[in-house]
Image (tube, rainbow, N blue to C red):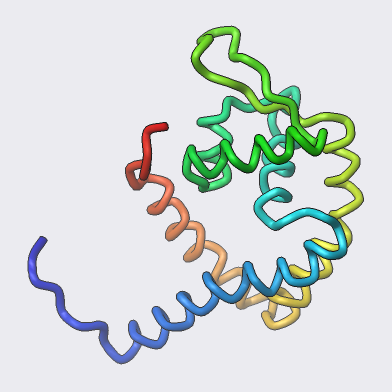
Length: 158
């Protein structure tokens, strides 16, 4: 990789703010959400992804991609949610080496019960601090950054 120039006077504060958000926002959401709902933010994200999937089912590798988690991390989360009765793991009929995650009725009920708390935390932590114009402007920018990250090669092959 070639030599890179230092961040300029606009880039440096933008980068510092982005780094602060990526570390502080999950913690701010989790601090109240976990005690209120019994779900970690990661658990909630997995349940949401499964609730939006056809038949509430996703291959584990697709669930990892959808949630932005590594294969090893999604396996641990799914195993924990399975122990709690919120998700079932089933062998993939098309590939016996792969597994699918399926949202259970109890998982859907837990997700629906947790939604008001999640919404309140998201509004208090993010949207209450932004104008409608901020959201319209920042939305496409954040979507481009997310798409660039989604296009990056996976970090593990489990």
